[in-house]
Amino acid sequence: MANRLVTTALRLHGPINLMIEELLDRGLPKKSGRFEAVLRLSLAQLLFLPELGAHSAIFLAGEAMRADPKSQHLIKLINGVLREAQRRGAPDLDASMLFPPTLLVTWRQAYGDTAVEAFGRALLDDAPLDVTLRETDPGLGGVPVLADTVRILDRDRSVIDLPGYAEGKFWVQDAAAAIPARLMKLSTGARALDLCAAPGGKTAQLIKAGYQVTALDRDPQRMERLATNLARLGYAADLVTEDALTYAPDTPFEGILLDAPCSATGTFRRHPEVAWHRNPADIAGRVELQRRLISRSVGQLIPGGTLIYCVCSLEPEEGEQQARWAAAQGLEVDPIVPEELDGWVAPVTKEGFVRTHPALTVPGDAGGTLDGFFIVRFKRR
Image (cartoon, rainbow, N blue to C red; front, side):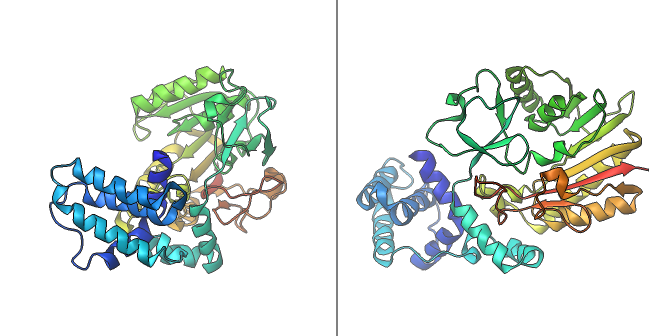
């Protein structure tokens, strides 16, 4: 219940902002302790989770305020605000409420109004659970999506309770996130580098494909998690804890997968807070870092080697524009074709890029959407 309440409050951050502005003429009181946090959670329960009980929302808000010495003087205020919100009822929701204005402008230009409205619906829905199979399906009761991705329809059980988890029969990976590694078309036994590799889903895919894999990430804790995940799967890779910008391998690689640090706006279905933590300056900084990583990666490839660049971002600056910049630096785009995605045409662009977003429906009978991802494949001239 607690997780559901917090997730709902995060998904509805925008509408709750508007309600707070309308309900508090003088704005949020200063030095109010936990007032704002309690108000947001209470509005989420009161107006958008009515099955949890309206009386319960108001009562628990008062109890939470009473437990904080810095908030006790505002019990009467929060009670009055919640009762007024209850009287007015929940607002009608649309995409213009659900996302920050700066992102909406970019998204409408890039994807169109109809897609952006679908983004709003995708935000309000629970993101599905997708897994990548190590070998055969251990009886998950899911529906095939793309290649070895299966969408789990029964969400009543936790991941660790699903059949085959302890035996390493699968790993959790969104259908979109599973695409980039499949596009690495190397010979069996080829040396492949997974940059910014943690938590290891793409590393596992490259190992499964039969490559000799080096997985690199600069965060020791994330690398520990990657090692744990690979051990559960029975996979092994050369693990390197180092900054990708300073890494200097003795021998160049035949393939490099660069899942670059990005704004992560394409993951808003699972992480609704990311949309509210991004601004143009933040995105510009990430674009510059991505370019440095691309340039560094080129020097670590053999001539004719493959570089796959991908980001879980919906921002064209980090995707399509970045790919065009890289091509102008001497990399040659190796176009991706629908046949590499089981014939799925929708995400393949005229330039041979792959662009997924939460307005697309996954192929097959599973239904539902997927994360926003951008993927381009290059050859080193």
